[in-house]
Length: 118
Image (spheres, rainbow, N blue to C red):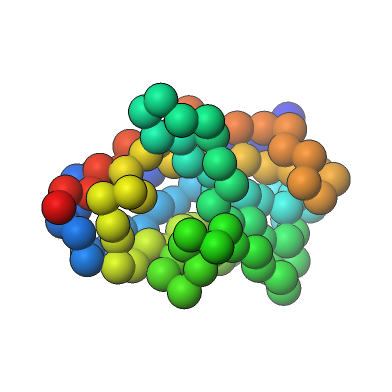
């Protein structure tokens, strides 16, 4: 069982930056691939970024590539999403998720709101 708690969301102007954190409980955090997803009002949830359990490989949606960076600190049971050059279309609730098998996310956080003003 893994419990995930996101933090770091807020209101930022376009062009600004935010860093989201996702703290995980449990001793097996380093066994899980971690992902970030987002859901904007009236839209389906979409993939944003992911990092493999070792931190050796990362993946990004085309819409955020070059602007967002995902990383993890297994010693702190935490995964991060650094978001630069934010755009109004990045406004959404951001969720972190844990996958024991690549791509199959078993556990989800409660989400944190990110609002980018123009």
